[in-house]
Length: 122
Image (cartoon, rainbow, N blue to C red):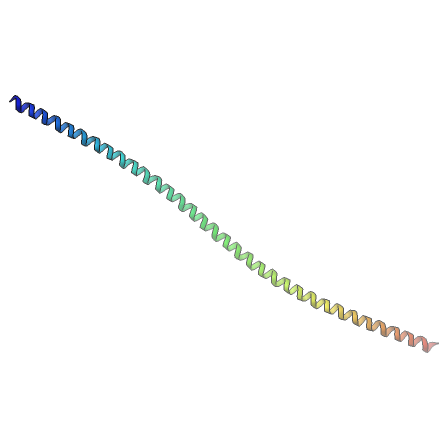
């Protein structure tokens, strides 16, 4: 009986030891799970922050592209205006030159008329 009691005590101690090992292993796994959950949470927060930055960058890119397109349109319009102004300047210059020639001709004719008038009067 004493042997049986000793065997049961040994058996209980062995079961208790195995139980303690299992609890220790369970605790280690729970700690590992907690660390992994924290890591997942941290990664999710980083992912969300990166997605916000990406969205902000995309919004900024679209805004810049719209401004670029507006500047291109404005530049094109200004180039057309400049070309038109150059053409108008050339036309005006031709008209001024033509009017200057006409004035010279008229002045020469006026001098001839005065000269002829002076000859006739004298």
